[in-house]
Length: 447
Image (cartoon, rainbow, N blue to C red; front, side, top):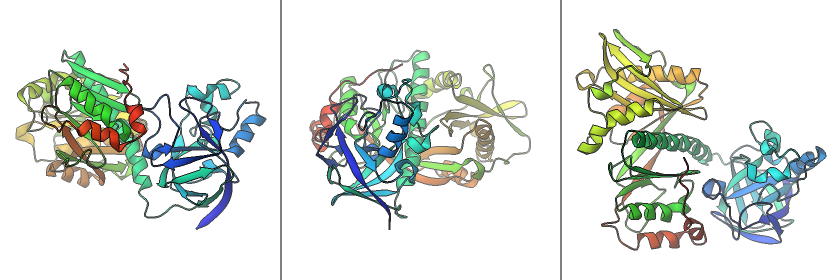
């Protein structure tokens, strides 16, 4: 159903940075407009943020306040007119001209790059957090084609069969999972292990000579930034060790996933927070409290001896880091289980749970889930997340009994430079065409 109509005021491109300049037309592909690029290309772009849009109605309101803003000044690819763009729901679709169809995915958070467009150099004036009516909006491309100045725009309601809500939720969740792993890698470094970390926007990669296994030879960010697959493969190749990464589909011909990870999620009020066991007390642990990680094994059965021995020290260090909350389950004065809650942008990630071997199968994991859910609610989280291997029946059962539901699963691939087809990296570059050029740049090593 067509709800309203408008037009394209301006089509804007730049090789990176702002302002983006007007062009008569541009081809819109799955990853954005041909000829457009970003300086900070690990925090922009990708399939869910292929096109940035901004309404001329918002520009006019800003200009009335005295801001020196013009179409293209804040980096939008398409300046729209005729409807309040930022008031549309996620999932609304824009049919532009005769070819292009976009689907709105999320507001675009502002950064200091666009400060010059504001009289006080405060780009927060168009943040969806404080000014949702005047935000820029990201979209993904459902149908490719050419967009032109003065093309008509037909606004269509969301497709009820669209997976956009799931994709947006996954984007939030993956940000939390990525940041939690960066904290884990830093904790391993602090414990004296050699772990090399790339932390660049939404791309995060770890390689380790001391711990050459998951999760210390691992990459995050390729679902939202698949064009950086060549960078990830080259990082593992340079380190000379195998690495693991999630990717939306086979990364090269013949690639088979090494494992599947299932993401379970639940609204904070949907989780059973009242579950308790007689005689068991679950409480948030202090810095000097003991924990179960030094009593029983922690990790996967496939963990090598070096990694199994490293876990207690790494997890103790991780527990002291910002946004991490450690919990102990105590029975008869003895610590019988430990677990963690990591919070990030109102998401509570339940992770690192371990029960000593002779106390398993009694519901202690359920009690740990309930206690962490209560604490997450106190901290203002609105969404809880559990991730587990698809073949971990016990963890899946505990999550579902607590009120979690499967949101999605992702395929984890393994790249071993010692045995992989040497054409894999070249094929990855070829798949992404113009985007491969961006992926050739060295990525940063932020602290």
